[in-house]
Amino acid sequence: MSTLTLKVPDVLNTQLNSYAKQKGLSKSEIVRIALSEYFSRDNISFEGSILDLSEDLAGSIEAPSDISINKDYLEGYCA
Image (tube, rainbow, N blue to C red; front, side, top):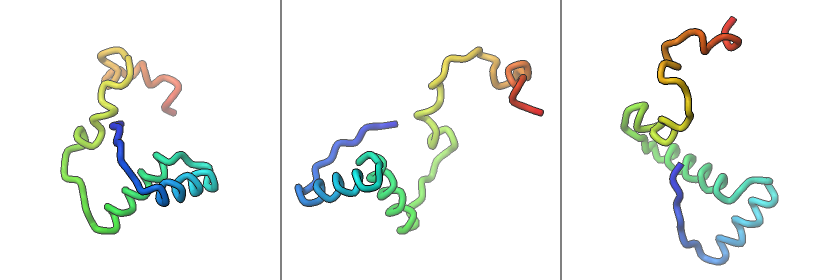
């Protein structure tokens, strides 16, 4: 996940702090939700591959190189 730094007016920051405390959410979570809702409302879509959408996750775990093709690793996860 990328980090975004932004400047907001004091009044907006006060509202954000109050809302975050009231809802029990972090300010970051509230801003992420607000941005998602803004983009979905305006029908702004992201064009890209699944890799583009998940690039922050790719390679984020340490695992054997054959984990995606070796069924032995699925033991206990499938019926």
